[in-house]
Amino acid sequence: MPEIEAPGETASRNVLLITADQWRWDFCSASGFPCPTTPNIDRLAADATRFDSHFANSTPCGPSRACLLTGMYAHNHRSVLNGTPLDGNFTNLALEARKRGYVPKLFGYTDTSADPRHRAEGDPALFTYQGVLPGFDPACLLIEDNLPWLSFLEEQGYDVPGPGYAIFRPLQADEEAAPTRQPAPYRAEHSDTAWLVDQCIDHLRRSQDQDGAEPFFVHLSLLRPHPPWIAAEPYNTLFDPADMPAARGRGKAAAHPFLRWQSGRIRQTSYFAGGQGLAADLDDHAIAHLRATYAGLLREVDDNLGRLFQALRDIGRYDETLIVLTSDHGEQIGDHFLLGKLGFFDASYRIPLIIRDPGRPTGHGRTIDAFTESVDVMPTILDWIGQPAPGQCDGFGLAPWLDGGDPDGWREAVHWSFDFRDPQNQEAEAQFGLPSDACTATVRRERDWKYVHFAGLPPLLFDLANDPAETTDLSGDPARHGQRLAMAEAMLAWRQRKGYGALANTLLTEDGPIERERTLTGPPRGDAGQSVTV
Image (tube, rainbow, N blue to C red):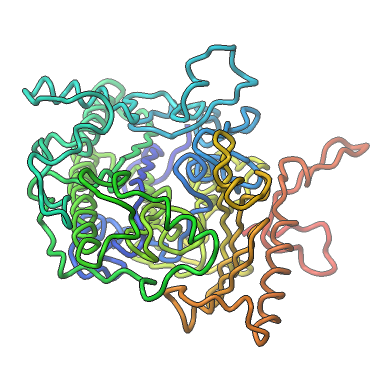
């Protein structure tokens, strides 16, 4: 098992990968949010490396986590919807960790849809999108039925209405425009967040007592601040709606056909109990209340993660553990009259990333503004445990930043994709008169410009330098045709470079196989035999 040299001792290399579901970047107080949503996470960031321009590569949960846990873009792994199978021939973070002797433990969920070609007919895994990523040992599986947590609530004397999300209802009705301000019917110390963190802490303590210094690999996957949006006291009223930043892009009706379609179908009841009508019907007052509840749920996550970080210190493992804290994707929460995670706006894709590498203290306290992506997380963790990143990985390890450096040749843009096909009901296909494979969009996001290419709908072009709220589409402006063409060509070049590449840089020769790592930069001119890896 790999080891690191810590001051005065030899320590094991542990891994703690934490995801908080549907957590958008700008609700973190370290990112400038006006309320103290994340004091414990801020303290972690001050003792770690914070990546301030980090983006998810897909939505919703299943596709995004597939990118995170395989290191692959969605156009390569092709698990593009909740329920689209993830090809069982791909490796992943957990399987690669097992090659180094770890037994990765899962607390929560991965939303991995099983490959039916690798399963017997009638296998229960083929009837849900909420499967477990191969390689993870589900130490505490908490999916949408919530059964383990609900059983705990029953033991505490609560009246549990049934499995699933039925528990996430207020004790009494609230004013129609602010239904989330009433408390949840359970105490904060018994919430799903607190309970799951308790399970993780108990596991770490038991492992320490039983196995001593044996290295661990833990993935804690928290639901919150994902809806249903309801919080236990005091988190339900911890923040004043008047202090919430106003939603963006609400000055004019949606012009793009995709947005018009979404505005007419996203219902409030999918996000909070007691909602009436469409998300687009919510006024600014209601959105402010939703945002205050969302911020309260995030603060609840933060308080419980503070307990987890302290538990690591108490058992002497904090300075032996790579801590990676991120999300699967963001949340619109009123921006552009939308709720949820979808499409192409930054609110759905820009997410936090904090990495504390105890073996690289020169990177502690740094804030990195360079573009990073979810596909970079897997190779970064594998680097920590001494396992080479497999050829399928589209991302690159972030060790150069953690080491205190600023590598040359880093990416100048991020990319993500979004599928809105509907293999079951064909709603999108019927709405737009498109085949399923044309119900998809790909985004190139540079520092000052964003280009959105739909396979079967009109494109979009945004001038982020002058229009950061993404309100004005310039794709039809003749004066911007050159910029649109340049963005489209850059996206095409990226897509050509980022085709599935597990064996593309392998060559069978008379001396046997030659393998080259995928790199961001090429070899120096005149030295074709040298590879420069970032």
